[in-house]
Image (cartoon, rainbow, N blue to C red; front, side, top):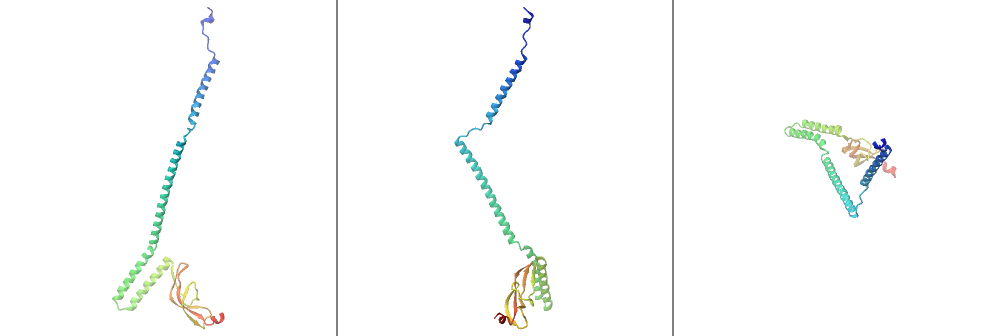
Length: 205
């Protein structure tokens, strides 16, 4: 027997590497097929598609109903708050007037138990002055005098008219009822007696 027969042949390194690469490629190919197979969407039957759409429609309808209910509750709450604000809008004003009413009650009580008319009248004048001053300074309600002023239909309402030869334009002779302005707006025109020029009709003719 020769020496060459006593030693086993060594495996070819090139063949081993090729087999390993082939095995790796086969494994990757199987893995890719498995992954690709899992990503493919499952085809739904028409009945399943209809059931899915009905479920989505029911969910959407439920959301819309909830939003509509929320909006209705919000609207009712806003209306209640608005109504409450209207009903109690004058609360601060009334709280300012209540002490004035107290003063009137005290003045009336004092007048009923006193014969001093002048003192009673002075007390009433003080209360009226206090009320007018408070309404003007805090609430912007101003009373205006019209006597001696040119007649202005935006400020005055003529209840009586008298002719006069001494004037050339309509003049307010006297206030019958005072006018009032709230800030810059006339909220009650003054009711007045007006003097008119005597020659107005002749010039117009």
